[in-house]
Amino acid sequence: MHTQKKILVIKHGSFGDLILATGAMKSISNFFPDHNIYILTESKYQEFISHAPFVKNILCDDREPISKLYKNFFLIKKIVDLNFEYIFDLQNSLRTSFYNGILRFFTSCKISSSKRFSHYRYHIPLQGTEHVITGLNNQLALTGIDKFSQPSVDWLNDENFSCDISNPFVILIPGTSPKGIKKRWMPENYALISKYLINNNYNVVVVGTEEDMISASPIFKLCPETINLLGKSPPKILFNLAKRAKFIISNDTGPAILSALSNTTLLWIVNDNSVSKANIPIGNDVIKISSNSINDISVEKVKNVLIHKKLI
Image (cartoon, rainbow, N blue to C red; front, side):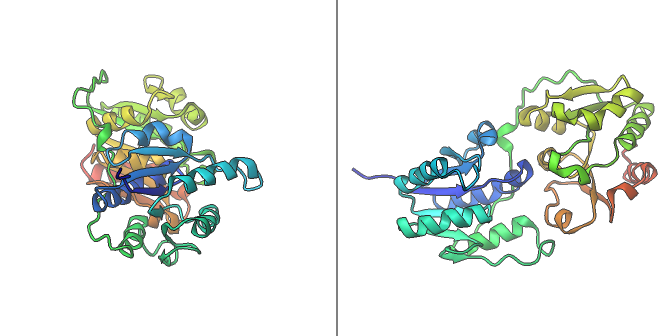
């Protein structure tokens, strides 16, 4: 009986990183149409990525400390037992280098990575000199892949999505992950922009997780009429809201990467550094507003961009 060949794609990291890697995942799937594609990622992303058309199976890896040998042993044993033909390490981390070393010794799979123990090793240049998507495509090209897809979350699109928010409305994403505090534009600035938008006859919708309340509370205090969707805007809802919004204002965070793929105008307020250079969202109209320090970006500067782009 013929056994279908299998490929493992590894992607941990932030939500935004995962979204930016969807193009590479699709490229792999298109180049190997007869292979069964497995994704190794964190359990918190399982529901989101499970609906992607290029994913057949998901393995969960919540990145237990390497010292927890018991849990890591059974994960690696599962990977070994599945007998993959190829492993595409899109995370390219010290952890995945550890995995790759074991898998190269105990299996015959071919490994694509920027780390040691890979058969197809891509040497990543200095951060900020190439976009992460360019780097992933260059990595894949070493295996013979020559047609590349852009990041996409089209499986989230719902033409029958019911939106009871009156037009025109604007989406604000004032939060970040706990590790991204330095990427946050001051909450008081978001509050002042909200007031400005409301005075210009826009409805304002604030999205994010419940943990983003610390960033959003000044908005709700100054503008109680703002629509609060904290904790009520999972990826599918956010994407479909973004498609219907007039524009979006956000920090450098995963939901911004997702929203940009709706092709609605995104004002991306960020620190001007190697991280933001390498991770610019993909979309038809991404407007980067940056400074060496995000705290130096004034409310007036953002207002002027809105006026210049005829969004107000």
